[in-house]
Length: 487
Image (cartoon, rainbow, N blue to C red):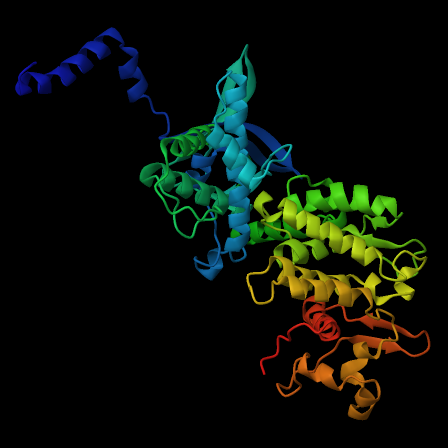
């Protein structure tokens, strides 16, 4: 072993030797090339304005971009406030894409996939394809010598753009995607450093133990693959704050939003939506010629019994998740037991008198999605809920038996409870319903909907989240189930 003083001399001697053998080093480090990060780009003209398109790895996105939102002075803002929950949902999507990329790479190189990688992918759910939409940004300071043409045979074939230290690509469209990238980067850095899942992360796990080497290796592979997983950026040059704001407005308001029903029709990633398509639509509804409408609003006068795909998914969100939407659903939320109960739910719904008749919305209130949400909520509470006192076989039988003889007709006076006089409530035998429905004392005006005397139809209010708990109270009253009112 060399003495310490000789070891210390080894590095500079080696450097001198390398430079002597490679004089290019001297030339390379003494040129006047601007200092900073260099990216390949293509020149574009968007609506006649000069822009360039480039791509960056996830780490570079995090490093070289920023958002001018409410943490900055008002005169520098060109963004809305960040919705962290939305960013967390996108972060999970990006993480799933990295896991899929790791699996794809292993298959390509003939490597073993590994049980742990497969397990994590199955727990989060698979989908056929992943892609992140391009970000739109503005570089407020850029000089002519920062754009370098690349030539071949005397022709410009591409360009390089050099971001100097301090240059920032200000995100105009895509701040939630950028934040999602940051969350993924933080997650992977934490889990690979400490071998534990970070608290409060977007990652859905309850594992508090130290991770084994196989699981850590999965996340190390994701971290490695994120270094070359790129995102495209369209970069505008030298826009003022006013122009950034206008561009933000136009990008977010000049496009037509896809109807939820169409979006759900094309989605194969969400396990609740997959159940809706493969089981309810393609199996159960197919047997009864029950039609699915790929539009969000369905007319009452439709001849065939039907429901919009949007509302069908919303009902199943209540049934499986006890939520208003299916966002964030995981395969663990759609167990075989839950699917068995859900199948029973839908067969019982279709068995309600009038549900399979022509113009069924005029024949039964059960054809209104808000009523089905109320039934779905009761199913969730009594079959899947956390309250063990409610989740008993006795209550489950009461619900199923009670719904089979409940009056879902439009003329059922229970729907008009809040618009009936006290004497009328007594005439219809609704006095005991008072113990189930919320009291009027809090000053809130209850509104279940409106009854049309001429057509004898009851239309429930469109404020579903306010209405379906009240419908549920009426159903509990009929089924002699425990009231949510405290005595």
